Image (cartoon, rainbow, N blue to C red; front, side, top):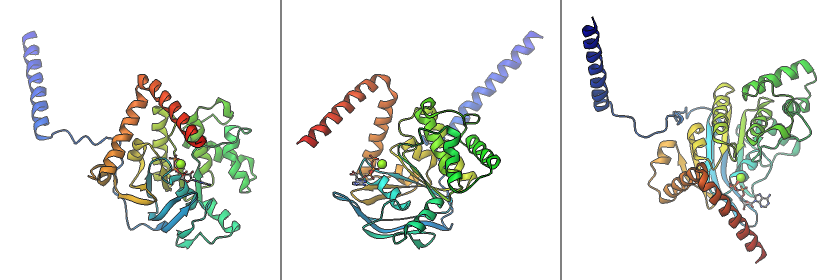
Length: 320
Ligand SMILES: Nc1ncnc2c1ncn2[C@@H]1O[C@H](COP(=O)(O)OP(=O)(O)OP(=O)(O)O)[C@@H](O)[C@H]1O
Ligand SMILES: [Mg+2]
C-alpha cells in the first residue's frame, strides 16, 4: 500500500517537473512588461472631446510654444515632462483657467479661448480639475467637501445629497469616512477626497494634476486603480499629468512628453518605452532611478539632504 502511494507520488513529481521544464521551454516567460500595464488598445474613431491647435503661452519665457493634440471620448492621456515644462499650464488652459496667447482650444468642436465668464463656468461643470495639491476645504468634513459642488449646483434635497456623497465615498474606497476632518486625513486620503469632489457633478472630462505625488506606494496603487475605474465605469475622458511613470503605465492609453514648449513625443506605451530617442531613454532612466531611490530608506536621508541643498541653491540663485 505504502509502496503504491510512494510510486504514485514519484510519478506525479516527475510529471510536475517535466511540465515545468517543457512549459518554460515552449512558452518562455513574457517580456518584462509589468503585469499592471494598461492595455493600450483604444478606439481611435471615438468622438473628439478636446483639441489643442498650435497653442502657445508665455510668462517670463515661452512655456508652451506650439502644442497640438487631441483627446477622444473615454481616452486617458498621460502628460509627462520635467518640472516647469508646462504640464499644469496645459491643464489650466484646457479648464479655461488660463487663456493661450496663440492657438485654439476646442471642447466638442467649440473654441473655448473666446468664451466669456458665464460660458467658462458652464465649461468647468463639464471639465473637472483635481489640483496638484489635492486642495480640499479645511473647515468642512470629508462628506461636506464632497457635497460642496452638489450644493453649489443647486441640489437641495438632503437625502439625495447624502446618497450621492455615500456613492462617491464608496467609489473612492472611503465608505463611512464622511465625518472625518481634514487634520485626520493623510495626503493620500486628501487626494481621494479631492477626486470624489471633482467627480461629484458627473463631469465629462477630468484633469488630474500629479494625482499620486507625495503619497505612499499602497495609496498610490489605489489612486491609480481609481483613475482606471472612473475611466471605465463613469466613462470619463481623462488627462493625467504626472512625474510618476508607474502611474502613467497603469492608467494611460496614450502619452505625450513636453519639452522646450513643444510635444517631444506622442504615442502609446510600447512606442514610448521602446523609443531609441536619447532624451526619452534618459527621462525613463532618470525616473526609475528617482523611484528606486525614494523606495530605499537609506537613500531617503540622502534625498532630503539633496532637497535641502537644492532649495538652498535655488534661494542662492534668486539672491544673485
Ligand atoms: N500664473 C503664472 N504666472 C507666471 N508664471 C507662471 C504661471 N503659471 C506657470 N508659470 C510658469 O510657467 C512654467 C511652467 O509651469 P507649470 O506649472 O506648468 O510647470 P509643470 O510642468 O507643471 O511643473 P511641475 O512638474 O513642477 O508641476 C514655470 O516656469 C512657472 O513658473
Ligand atoms: Mg505642475
